[in-house]
Length: 250
Image (tube, rainbow, N blue to C red; front, side, top):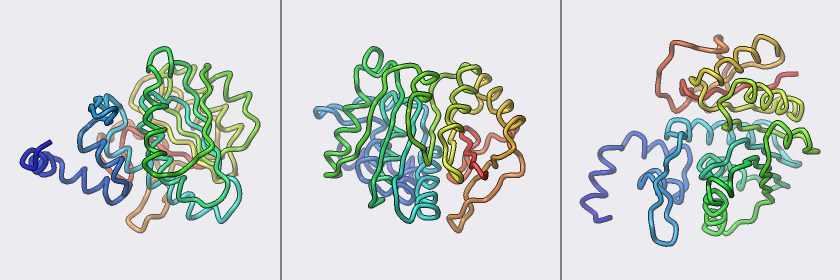
């Protein structure tokens, strides 16, 4: 892209691109949002992702604050349900790679090869090569409702961005709860979809050992009084209306 067009792109999306620099601070990921696509074999593959800039910055902050607050040492385990092109995975990995102790990353996506043609795996491997880092991640290509139950570890963070069918989403949440550490996070995307909304409403009605959290200007977790806000349409880097985070308190 020539300099003139680059300047136009930056001017048009200055607020969002500056936020990516501030909250994510990674040139590989910045270029993804700048070009709105992944560079593979010198070709830009369109991003085509439901993870927007506001959600991306929210995820990045959540993971960083969690690590800084709760993980002095020991294993750090991440569970991701729904992989697709790997956008959210890169954002989470960017923070996880800064943690100096043992790290594990399990990804559930039954369609990565059949539907996504392994583009998520390609993007993650390219990112790790760019970062000159290694990470023990494992892709499980089977249904999340079965795959998560078979995993034999406790997780610090579960990111749910798979099916929008309510009965699957609630099972993903329940399975994540069964594997989640105390103080661990469940991050749920696409909360405005009816199936996801119904699952969240069932979850917060039944599980009283969670609080919904957002982030204040001091980079701290704060508790949201409303567990499911059906009216908010706000775009926020600290509390987007399309993505919620719940913390397990006991």
